Image (cartoon, rainbow, N blue to C red):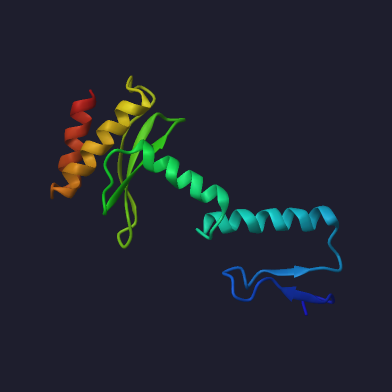
Length: 137
């Protein structure tokens, strides 16, 4: 029981098993909103969904080089590239570009490919960052 209302667990085998839904007090719009949020959580957690498959195939076509240790993220509002580490060492290593940078997305992504190749070849992150900042300016 949750408060004074009867509740049930949603999908005991799913990662959402801790989510509780109280059926007696919610309106139909609230239930629809919760269902929509559960669907988007499934996307975020990597559970199978139609849109997740199309977005992964789209991102694979943009990058020419795929690294086992790093990935490239393009931030369109700031016109910059972020180089992120893949697990087990997660987090962003560094970023380059910016609003004042005159290069477009495709050329920045090309520099991102070169950066990942240098990092996979064994160069340190600081050396590669100095190289790419010098090359962009």
